[in-house]
Image (cartoon, rainbow, N blue to C red; front, side, top):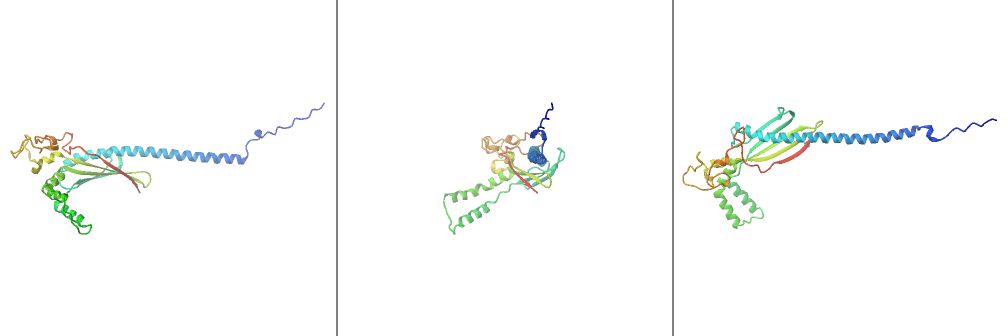
Length: 250
């Protein structure tokens, strides 16, 4: 008795994939890999930027402190601007450069303030106003020379620009600004009860218990301005704050 051969199985799963199916799978894989590659590159760039900005922030703080020592060696608080340029090669970052300006804060004369006020008063049609504010402004002329000398002798503005490369022709810039104060310099101003002797007593011999000392301390001693930092007699006053700005340029 003859038996009929069984029919060949024709299920689709045993025939494999067609060329079209393979091409579609490769296209989907390419799109997925492109997305993963883009995300990975963005992650690497963010990590590199975080590393650079962290290093630059510490270097900026370092150069601000180091400038105090360098300025003390260059003559101290002179009545002119000072500039310092260089890089951080000794610290291991030769591609990061800095440019710092120690700005002598020059205040205007009282006559210039008076002219500016008169111009502002007459700007609205030629009418000049005389009120209590004008009287107080006139009284300012009596104390303005003392205020002007106090600011110019005891305050300096410090601005440092840090520049470092970031891929290709792009450069990142960090601007850091702060103010230095030196209360000890106020003791050198006679108008503020200055010119103290080494014993902390008024050299004029006619004042006691006054407010001529640094920071408005009673007794007029000169002990408030002594530097407590190692490495020189740089500015010792408290800093009100540091302003930071950033930009990218090509």
